[in-house]
Image 1 (tube, rainbow, N blue to C red):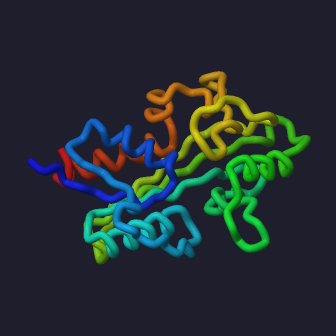
Image 2 (image 1 turned 90 degrees about the horizontal axis):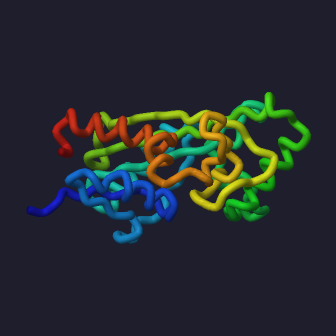
Length: 207
């Protein structure tokens, strides 16, 4: 029996690895959009949900497959929700080219320099969108949040993005120090994907 296939509308290696781990217990085969030479979507939405739908529609259009897209980022309370939807390109250069995770982290630390822990509250937010096809009039959308505190110094070497700066008081460590299985269960993406899997199961799309 051929396993149903969904395309993941992302080229981010860290995200793809998490999706593969989380989908491993289902009957679904997933593949990155790069296998189909899908061009990057123009993410011109003003919210995580809008951008997730844009990316899912783009992947479904070019592959003809059901598509799942993630749009996620970090919201820092003291920065009025920044970097938000611009998390991956927070410190982009003058030509609009995305820079490294380390560069984004350095910019975040510089903006929060001198602020006490009480003013360093933050949340990772993940919006997932599933589209059966590019003209799907009712995409399945799930959103989850993961609360923490921004550290003054990076900790840990696991994960990617802002993980080394995202401290979890209840675990006494940064996201980048978590065991992979624990992170998959409690992270914003892990929570959102569990919600999505439940929705897709109830719709009879996976088992």
